[in-house]
Image (cartoon, rainbow, N blue to C red; front, top):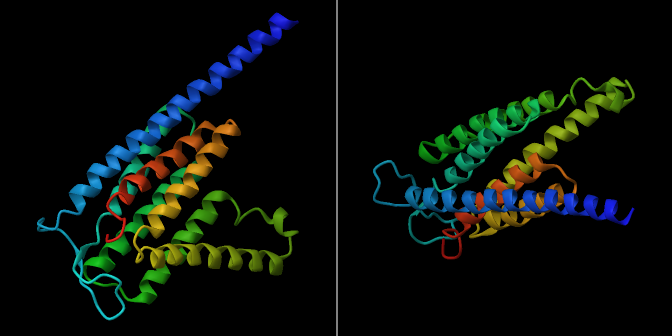
Length: 224
């Protein structure tokens, strides 16, 4: 019995140890890729560079690049693609990847030419509905007690909460290190929790986001 327990414990240690190595490697590689991409995107001499010129509401006093955050998005999509080649990826994550693209596109267009708030809000609501549809929440009336009024209230609350979070991060992005720091710390915690729960896919993707945010954060410390 003791030998049997020892074998089980050894296998368990090997399993969790190998996962730590993989997740750590994902975080480190994501950090390095994001660091390099952010550096390239923040070179102000590039012709395609979009600069944020200070105004009466700005916290900065000289033009700063606006495109550095694209590095985080590219690393996230790369991690999702690699994870899909190794593990079974639920359809919700494909919905998530698809929703990131219109959000990133409207944000980039807003930085470049300016997009009216009503159009930005419309895109955000559409993306939120995409995610809710992909999660199955729109069709799962069992959660709402088959009551259309309760279902409508839950749907409205979910949409408002998710749109609020998008705009909250957009607001925090104006403060040096705030959005990047929150993402790095929050998703690092998610990666640890996913590892402890034995969910390798969740841990992989969370570690990738934490690493990507950390790479961006190197160029986002004050004065960013």
